[in-house]
Length: 391
Image 1 (spheres, rainbow, N blue to C red):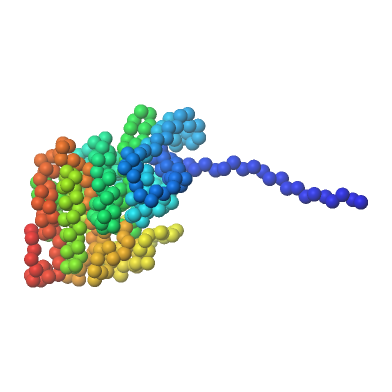
Image 2: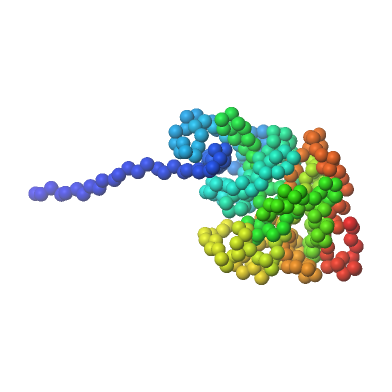
């Protein structure tokens, strides 16, 4: 009786592909590697029912020696330290940022350097999808963040994320060739889909508050209070939006004051609807965006800006800035505005303590709370002369 032939199939073993982190700067390659590693480690950690005091002191440290893979992009020796991983994961969750979205945004493409400025010489990087900002910090600013983190988390929880304060998602220390750099990851306060045509750093002060000629020569300069006033600008918003905005601003300033923080600014970005354009500075009709987006408000589109998606709070009659989950605070111009526009607002640079060295200009700002900012905002009633206006 003939034997049955057994069919066999040869399988060639294929080694698992390793993820490459290509960046021009070794520190950025290490940062991308660190994000990938720390987020993957968090997948194996149970989510606690509530954060404990020790979670605000915890850290995760990774040290790599003689790294032989990807030598063209990664140094052989480096260290990554992640601060308070469970706390920042909780904050990301509350601000509707998933771990997968966070990792994809920060590691799929090299973040691009956006600007270097500030008294401490901070460097800002923008992720390729324009959702997150990576900012370098001084050691003093890191210490200040540790000092306020518990209060900041409690404040975010208490007010259900209804705040103009920075949305902090992660803090890290990177060490390469004995050089240490501290970075924090935050939400980009401007839309990642709409182009910002004009932006202002406002402190409610007129002392040395004018953009320098060097700043004005940039492709997208950041103007200041005196520039805003001399141009005759106002922020035209509806009555209900102004009332809610000023209440949130008052509450946020009170929080910063209680924590002895100063020298912060109100960052204002203006999207001109008539000019249009997406966040890359290219008209939507001339550029294919490709891919899908996972914005929480992807069903909203703006009239007069065809193809633009993911714009929050574009209804001027909406009773609340937070009627639905939002990524950034954006307010449409009221009907009486000279131009159709969308305003993006946020408080930035909050990690300066009263005890730290600041300029004379910085020591005066916000001493009168939100009163200094009231004159920047105009409602329909005030424009028609039927309401009060504090300047």
